[in-house]
Length: 192
Image 1 (cartoon, one colour):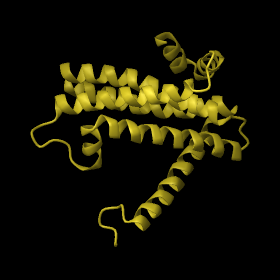
Image 2 (cartoon, rainbow, N blue to C red):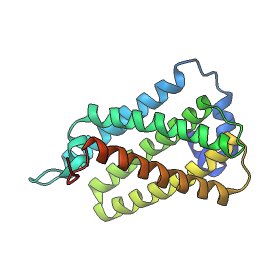
Image 3 (cartoon, rainbow, N blue to C red):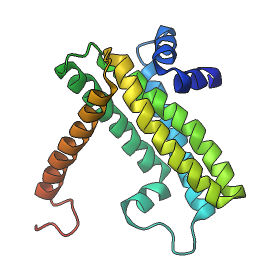
């Protein structure tokens, strides 16, 4: 798997084709999403436990990090919603991808991020400033992989258009979810 992760980073199109060619059963793609969410939540919890001061984490992220089950649940829902958007918005713009492929792409990106999160945690324990740089590099790699694997899932050729589509989808989705959260009274400071 490590070699396939390296290939995906070097050549996302080929890496994703090789990943798709594996014999995936009906629930295997979901299992990948659940496993990566669980691993990421445990790593986040470990990182918070090892690095936090006496005041602990604040806000929603602090609450999620304190409970790996909550964190994993949020990550699974986010991954499923992200895969749905990747599949449907891509098809609106002429893509050929299906939800199963989008779910595999999102799960695979998460698997690569979990591997890098493990490295980041180890580096942070040894040399905290370098761990922060690894974290920034990981975020940049995640953005690159999201664009590259979206292109692989849908057969798109223009990376700039994919970037614009992803940014537009994020902005519109954030706006709509903010309205929904404000309407339901979930946002702090929102009128009730």
